[in-house]
Amino acid sequence: MEIPYTKMKEISLDADKMNTKLLVFAAPILIIFAVPFLLIWPVNFAEELSDITINNIFSTLGVLFAGIIAHELIHGLFWSFFNKKGYHSIKFGIMWSSFTPYCHCKEPMKLKYYKLGAIMPAIVLGFIPALISIFTGSFGLLVFGFFFSIAAGGDLLMLWMLRKESNASWVQDHPDKIGCFIYGNAKEEE
Image (tube, rainbow, N blue to C red; front, side, top):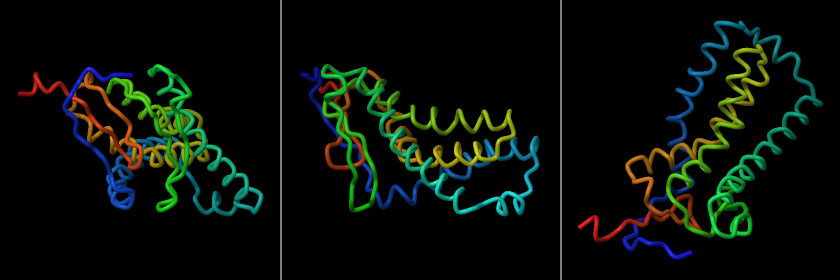
């Protein structure tokens, strides 16, 4: 697809530095979900910990692994809606240096669609389960929602870094780094 813009800038994150910056998102997310939950549904943490068995640990690890895969599939699904080749433009893999799974879109798209695809795993796997837990009292669902909200921290950080960019801009997912290239109209920016 030809991008109707000419000027480009790179917005990217180093995986190691990103992990330290993610702590900024952890506290507010914990407060937003855990405080209302604990006010409505007091939790006996000793009892919760005593219920942990080997079977629970393996089940939990299986759910977390499936959730990590689902996180990347959700990115791919939403980004595939907004590019010419659809799902054929989506590539999945793991950055082995930081053991970070990724979903990469090989085609450019409007920034507003890039942002939508970036936020959806946080909403679907993080925020919605955490909100449901507040109404149902499910401590496991609260932990699941919190974990996947934090797992989407890199996406939230990227959205924060893109907040001042025009949604009409075009974006190309970076092929090698956590980030993207933003294309702007050089004539409008002069």
